[in-house]
Length: 140
Image (cartoon, rainbow, N blue to C red):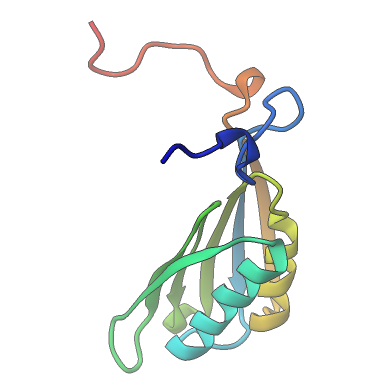
């Protein structure tokens, strides 16, 4: 059975938007750096807030008082997390494409973790004008 790709919600018009927006979030202070259940809840809530579809959530705890790393795999890309409770730091990536609003996911994560301080940087992925022209390593 053939799928109608033109009707797909992931179809993007390159002349309108770049294929993806990648937000890098740095949180200092806040809550839940050791709480795997709270982190899963936060990732799912962030995905819902930005209009993304969660395919899977994979989280790994490095021990009772150690950090957690993981990812929410989205149909529209991913949200990843790495925590360092010993230094009160959480790093998150929110990468979305299509109609999803990565900033809404970031807002939800800020509400959930309540960092004392945070920084967010944004990168337009796949933007032809922003791409550095060159030759891939190993190319002949």
